[in-house]
Image (cartoon, rainbow, N blue to C red):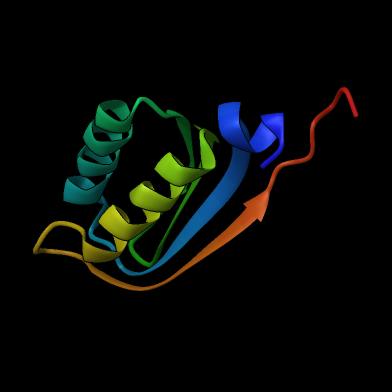
Length: 89
């Protein structure tokens, strides 16, 4: 595993489904904070949430699993993840 994967990795996570933004966004914020992940909500709507997330890849994997199970009032259909290219490149 290279140093970038161990220390910090940046991804755009897109969550599709009936995500009921009013309850899901605070849930995402709390769980990202519990995992120690840096995050920023980019897009939020009734059928999609996009967030930029950074941290160890294993913790981002845990965040994806948590979001897929989510709170009871959301239905996550799919989650797509894409790396964010570093500007220092």
